[in-house]
Length: 371
Image (cartoon, rainbow, N blue to C red):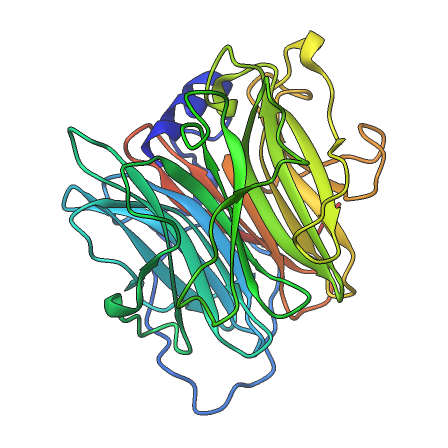
């Protein structure tokens, strides 16, 4: 989203502005629809610029491994002055399909999170921000069986349409098969800190429950922000997010920003928040947390931190791992908003991140092995 340019300034991300290692000449080609899915094989390689032909900003990536082994990347891109969502796929790590436009609104669409549920449907949530002078933001959802075809008529606002600011949503399939979206608002309960809210759907996203705050997770005196929700077991959901003091409303510009996690067996009742990081006194920024799993189902956290280098580093940590002893730096990813998914090839992962000059950021990708 546009406001993330502030993080680029704050962290002075090492790769901002591009480098010779970025392989900016990488070309996206149309792989065409497969007649039958062959066994996918992915190999580690150089970084790729997936959006280099767009002179404006591309941000907010999301990545997943589909059930058939296809690797899928979606993001927000600003084209012709407007922000919309796009998706591209690869079956071999070399050829990528031409980006498909998911949304086409006069308002700006930001922060997509894409998943595939156990029934094969793809579900995406994001927030749509109105143009000036209101700038109101609402969380939306849509779904499809075919990544190359998105029906705008299927878009649904998951919460009431009254003027409100709901943003940075995240989605997962609950153990009972329902969908759950967690998002952030700072004015639903008055003009206080940003809090986490949730809504659920038992009909595939056509209708959504009344929005409710995640009271067990929200801190009454601090901002809770940038959530990332994932189904991390047959009967478990895990939520990770940022918490920071009220000196700045955005965690990517707040030196008190830390990473927290909580778990739930049903999506309703949550464990007490567990701080993963707690380094406020050192002025460390820990921001943009996400979750990813290897092929064996072992889950890890990934986020950007200034704990190692003041310019910012991407690190990963087993969800139950000890911080900082078990953290590992990921030099393969040199930007912000990192997202990772395991490929069908054992030990090979696809990392996605944002990199570039403010106003001209691009989505970068790399297939790599963990240290």
